Image 1 (cartoon, rainbow, N blue to C red):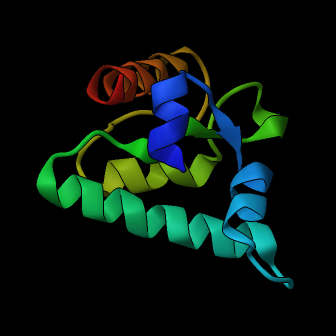
Image 2 (cartoon, rainbow, N blue to C red; image 1 turned 90 degrees about the vertical axis):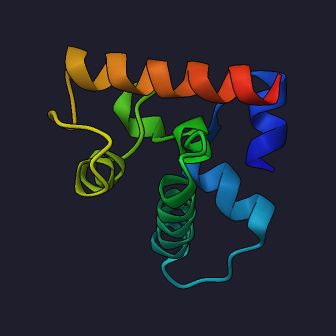
Length: 103
């Protein structure tokens, strides 16, 4: 599903991903975030584009949730804040990497 989003150049919200995965309640977004974090770890281990970058928080103006940036930092991929211009530039670069890889 995230590969298709990258091919189409479309970002998805966490809620859209949860619906596409048919994540059952309770804690739907939390379960979705955990699945996305597992994907991030797997992609980091092989140097693959971070398809998790295609997932954004509706409440954050087009940025992923803060946990995305925290985990990217823990994985040694990002060293910066979870919001602001630096976070936006990093996220845009990761989205561009996904678009290039799956176009």
